[in-house]
Image 1 (tube, rainbow, N blue to C red):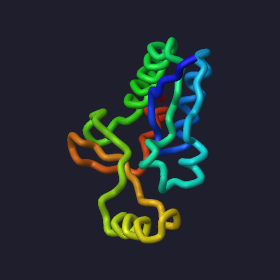
Image 2 (image 1 turned 90 degrees about the horizontal axis):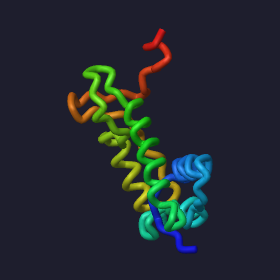
Image 3 (image 1 turned 45 degrees about the horizontal axis):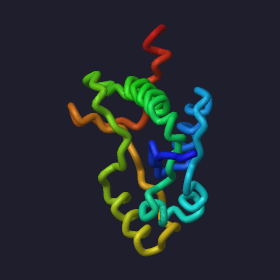
Length: 138
């Protein structure tokens, strides 16, 4: 049986969530290079990250499941200021993150984590947490 890469991740948690979504739909899959990327994060980019591998005959079904999950996730990313869904979770552009990048370059795995925020590309608003959808429906 031949396997095909359908996604690549830089994060073990995201990779396992997607693997679980596919397995819940009855699609056999596995993660390639997950141990290497988790144990030696500095090697994650050179080896292409954690790869979600699916049997060739299940690629269409897997892509449909992943696309559906992506669409649901995008709907949760709504800017509380303008209502746009053109929002992404990105690293903040601040001196602490630049320092973290330099430390990572010098020290390898021992740098501090960068701060991240949700950023709306339509109005430029940045926010730390997603609005609670449960409160909106009450």
